[in-house]
Length: 114
Length: 117
Image (cartoon, rainbow over all chains, first blue to last red; front, top):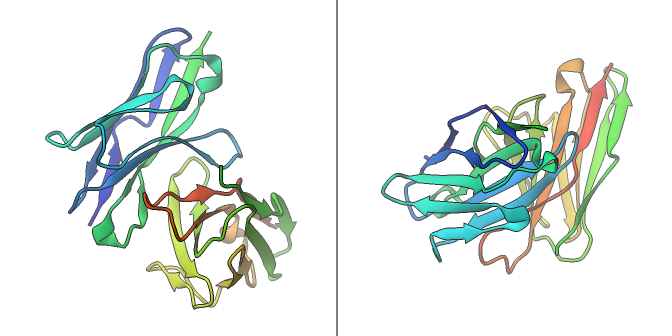
C-alpha cells in the first residue's frame, strides 16, 4: 500500500525567507509524485510533478522539489516566501500498483509573516 | 490547461433532503472522474472513482446508496448525497482525468461546500 507523510502540519516563515515543506512517501513501485496548493475554500492547484524524469523538478511560482529515492522523500522548497504563498500544501503519490489512485498527505499549512 | 468546474460552489440544505453536485470537464473528455471529501483542516479522502458509462467504484467505508454517482457522459459526473444529515457537511471536490493523461494527472474542480442543517 502507498502512503504519504508530511512531517510538519504547520510551517511559519517570514516573508523573503526560504520555505521547506517535507514529504516522505511509501510506494511499492516507481511512483509519480505531486505537490498541490489549496487556498482557503478553493480547489487544488498543481505546483509541480515528478514522473521518473529529472529528479529536481521546477514548478510554478518559484517552487521546486527534489525526488530522492534513497530517502523516499520529495521535499518542496522555495528560496523566498511571498505573502501569497500562505495556503495549505499537499504532497500526493500516485502508484501504478495501486491502480493509479492518488493518496494525499495530511497537508502542511504555511503561514507567512510580514 | 484542462479546466474542471463544479456546481454549485456552495449549498445549504435541510436534514433529510437530497443534494446533487455536478462536475464538468470543460475542454477535454474525462474518461475517469473522482470524488473526494475534505473535512475542515483535514486532507482529501477519495470517495469513489467513476468511469464513463459504468458503475462507480467506491472506497471502503463509503456508502454507495447514500452517495450516488453518475457518469453518464464524457464531460459530466454527478454526486447525489441522499437523505443528507449534518455529519455529511463537508467540502466535496471532484477531479477528472482524460484518456491520454500519460502521467496520470488529475485536474481538480474548485470544490462544493455542503452544509446540512
